Amino acid sequence: MKPQRHAAILDLVRIQRIPSQEVLRERLAERGFEVAQATLSRDIRELGLIKMPEEDGGAVYTVPAHVTDPTPALSRLLPALFL
Image (cartoon, rainbow, N blue to C red; front, side):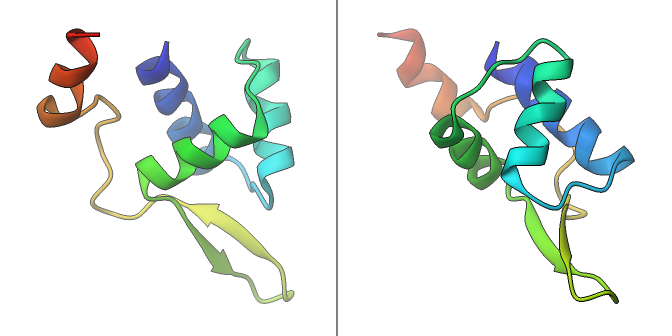
């Protein structure tokens, strides 16, 4: 479920203006992903999303150029498999 949620987050941030975690949470819910704020905050950190300022004084989440694949790194995946 986490890889699918990460893929959805990356897709949303790439195609929509997402100014806050609350807006992102609402967009994810529209796609069938109900997440808590703490989970979303962790996902944003794990994906390396950053907030970029806009000309109007606001800021939106963006995907850094190096983020292309939401699948977890093997080093993070293996310990989870042993649980």
